[in-house]
Amino acid sequence: MSELPPVSKLRTVGEHVELELGQDLANSPRYNDDIAPTRASQRTWSRWNVAALWVGMAICVPTYTLGGVLTAYFGLSVSEALWTILVANIVVLVPLTLNAFPGTRYGIPCPVVLRASFGIIGSNVPSLIRAVVACGWFGIQTLFGGIAIHLLLSAVSDSWAALGGTGEVIGFFIFWVANVVVVIRGSEAIKHLESLVAPMLLVVAIGLMFWAMPKDARSTTGQGMP
Image (cartoon, rainbow, N blue to C red; front, side, top):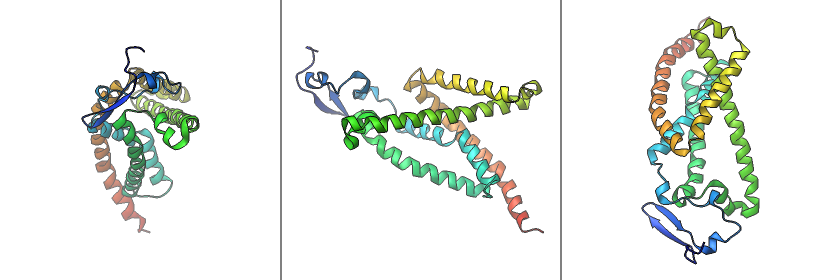
């Protein structure tokens, strides 16, 4: 602590603002290393990396499932379902971008950003709510991912298809392990993975659109037939 300057200072490093920690903040009961602002050198995510992360969150198994539900159960055409999903993702993107701006510029995590709106003690409530939502969404993603693995293996192996629900449970844990392996390696592993798979996801999504559009046109044409 004695090596730190007595007063903390802010300095601009390129597009980022960096905190030069001093003894005044280091000695505060509200400060700890887990939620301390990151250094500018630690903010290695570019605009491309953030865009790739958004692509990974938008084009996922639950999205495909939602598209199937909108067409099969709500009667939407393929194009209408795609537009609905696109608009929904853009609507979600706007508040996410606004919320992420202070963290990106100043290197502060979400719980600290929330202190400006809810106070130091009150920020714990939305932080915990956000954590619970994240856990629930991770479970939903893992559920659908496990089902997708089960269906894929069932298509190539009759013995796997015979497992039924057991195969879905095994698929769930396969998907869970794959996610945890990436997460425990830190944000850099997530960044590299998203940057690698984002173009693949876009290619697959475009390919599915070209595959589905003719079927959608035939079904639309057939609606007016007796």
